[in-house]
Length: 59
Image 1 (cartoon, rainbow, N blue to C red):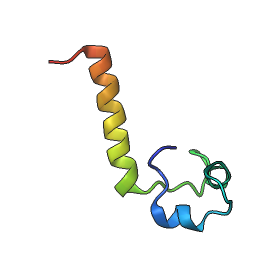
Image 2: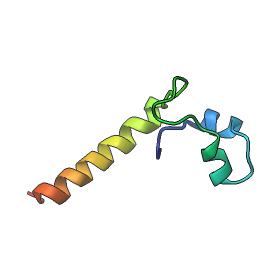
Image 3: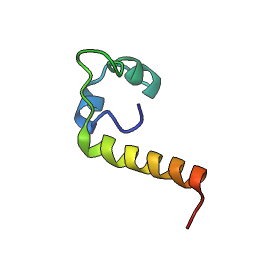
């Protein structure tokens, strides 16, 4: 879920703590799940790049 919630959606989420706000977000396969591309894509690229470099080794 890291990077999928945009700043506007996060500020509208009910709850006082990050755990409460995260619990209020729709799950990945829920019909109302809509990741924020501006934050989700960079986070996903960094995660996949890190995984690939860890598995394949650095050049």
